[in-house]
Amino acid sequence: MRSAEKIVAIDASQKTIAINREKINSSQVEYQQLDLFSWQPTKQQKLEAIALCKQTNYY
Image (cartoon, rainbow, N blue to C red):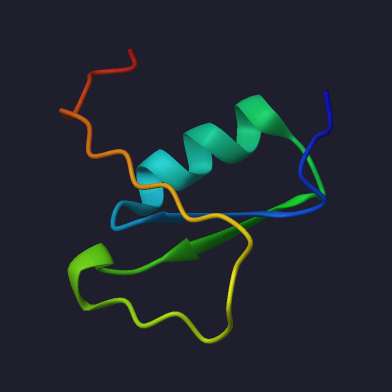
């Protein structure tokens, strides 16, 4: 199976981004903190997937 060359992870919560960055620890992931509903992509992507999840307490 092929893997992505680069992933852009978007979340409104800086805390969620920090948790994910610590768990994933990969230079292939670019994190952006912004409102998904007002997001305008700056370039065409090969794949876009959106997962809206209920907020979970990670502690």
